[in-house]
Length: 68
Image (cartoon, rainbow, N blue to C red):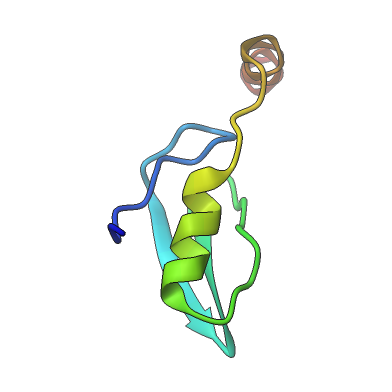
């Protein structure tokens, strides 16, 4: 398994990082999205990388809201 983090599935930012305080998780520094807390680093990264991306229509609508 790789320690490479996928881009954020919500804002598509590459500014994501692994964190650890009692539990392990991944956080997007751009939009604040967080992956689920896990008991180890590998599980936290795997959970983040498995997250499904929102439908393209939803992404387009959200981007429109940010611009207005």
